[in-house]
Image (tube, rainbow, N blue to C red; front, top):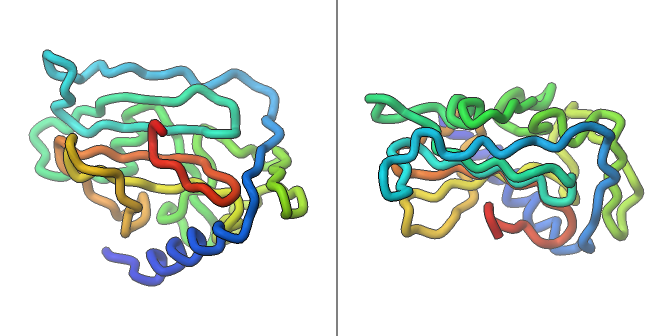
Length: 180
């Protein structure tokens, strides 16, 4: 199911970021998320499934990179691929799993997020996350393509073998692509 309204809100959020300064978060106590490696990568380093990158950015947790197996499926749900890479996601009350609010519990409900020019806040996961600090969902249609903002939410996005999906926690004016 395409979500044009969600895509418009995401674009609006990205545009709103141009008015914010770069920021940081105060991380909650706890262990860093380990990298899961590329257990299902084909010989030569290429991925026979879907590449997954989860970049916690200023949340100070280890980046997850993995190649999630897709089996014989022509398409697989992005939420399933991200979970296979060892990342748990939490959506919002208002938008469900279409909008990612937390990955592996980050930012935690009691974790103060600080962005220059914005009052410190915590993420409640009630509605659309703040434009100054959110999880951006990216896709790369092929290994040699550039990263693109996803036009659907995590709950409805379908991926094909050879594609990549990325989640990047971003604050401030820049929305970096996965791995940058």
